[in-house]
Length: 432
Image 1: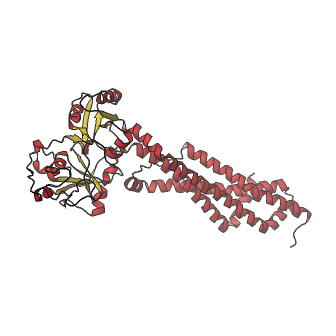
Image 2: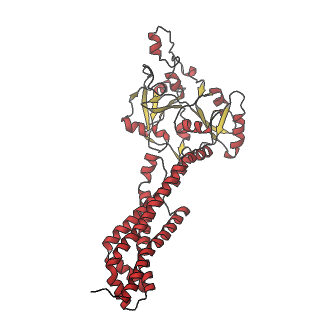
């Protein structure tokens, strides 16, 4: 066996230029297959942990999917809000460690504006990592510092896209924009006091303001009409505001953290049984897993494409060796003259083909590990995918074994051709 292995390697080395291209082709196909499988697993895990550390998300009774989309990913808008009194009642529950209100509705150049409290910056986690500051600080509590009503914190993508810095004055848009004129909150611009580092989470595309500041921007608005437009129509508008008078009437959602996660089901039942307001409490991990099923078809399609690419590369090995077999008739004839039997020549060519394929598979695995390791920061920040480089998963090992089997089957064609040529040349030696 050692002799045949050495002979197969030397034969392949003598044709290294052509076979190196084939090996690279196999390696790239394996890289695609393993990378797709790795990213699929990591993307699903990252999606499920897009909001970690939150035990329950509370909102108006309705669709759990809709609640997750607008409260976590700021996609879409709630069909109705929950009462602020429900948030106060949740805060008073002994099992609740913290509760963060979420208020949505306004935008800034297409990016959502999220009204909340300073607690958000200490409890928010994505992929198990909390928020960190690139510049500045969190907005202050307006109960202690009234000037905090005009403070805003920018997500990393918002600051990068529009080139904002600390101290910039920003004007929010009432609603999603694109409506009638005078929909900007020009009467109350906000000052940038903090910029977050990239997290890969939806908060990177968000602007965060005080809940009271969010309410202050809407003082004097009636039916979505700005105070400026109302005053032009000679309608009296009272825009004076005290911090104590800026308590909201309703909220979009509430994020809840418990003292003991084992009590999540009992707390959920209690919240949903409130008589004051029909509420719904959703466990984020479960809801996100269910939401992921929506894109499962795309996920499986990517894996299928990767497998087809890898299988085609294995067939290319067979094609190259098959085409080259006519030029190796003299080599095979010499081996036959030395007494090598045709079945041994079949195994010899089969071994050579397998060496090329296995070398390509090993190279593809190393490339995949290196790529995932080198690009993990980019994938986390730009795409929100937390990559966990490591040895192939069980599915990846199964895929590699399947590719090795395809390689063996593909190698049968040139090996059989070598067998036929050796039999033919044994009876009719080729002319020199």
